[in-house]
Length: 207
Length: 166
Image (cartoon, rainbow over all chains, first blue to last red):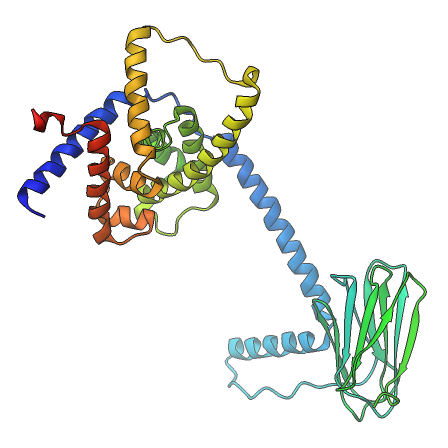
């Protein structure tokens, strides 16, 4: 930019400044929005408590799921060992004990996707619709191991093909479509019209 | 720094900037308050450059508020009895002249577009090119070009070069 151009720019800027000052409205007495800020702080505090409560509920629910419980136990063990000054050991494999296990959850949509990782040597999968607002899944009965993993749109049963564990999944009547898949087999679809629905799958038969 | 202290320090220049940017003093008052509520809710990570943050947020809120005000104006046009009543001007001739100049300045500024207008008015408030570039989301190098281009347009519309031509 040449000197002349720079001078022209400077003059224009000065004249604009003067013009703006000339037409500026007087500044009114603006009040510091203390009340609005306090209200916003109260709202934020309520939201924080709600989020904390939701996280606590999720965490409590997740504790019932074996992999999460095992992870928490293992993490606590590692932290305790570190705090106690013990040498860090390679974590032991997570034990998968047979026996009853139940998780409760709330399905997010009207379609529920239930996946069993693989067919078993024995056991059944029972799906029921009930009048309860929440859902539950339990494993028990036969020999073997299984993990119940709650997903946003359904449940995954991580099992062992040598297992003979049976599973019962109870869903609220708001779930209208239940898609059940075992291993690589094509999923079956059950349609529910309310509570009282019941479907039983032989986990050997669908192998 | 406490919020009330920041408010005391910056609300006048923010009001001036927003009333120039929007051309609506009443709207500017609301925007200034909104900026400080936003500051309380989501303060900037970098407290050292809070002034630039205030102007950037004011620009964003002002643009949104102007859209809302335009909608309100359209609705009021259909229902004139709902339009706010103002105090009568003390001196009709002076007020008329001032209103006319204000209208011309306002029209010239609006014709620039939001980004150029923000750049020019932030420069009026003494911001460095780097700070302006951060606030409007452009490069430091292009701020100078934008200012020159905006001044060129305003010079034509507001006759800023009149004395040079005499």
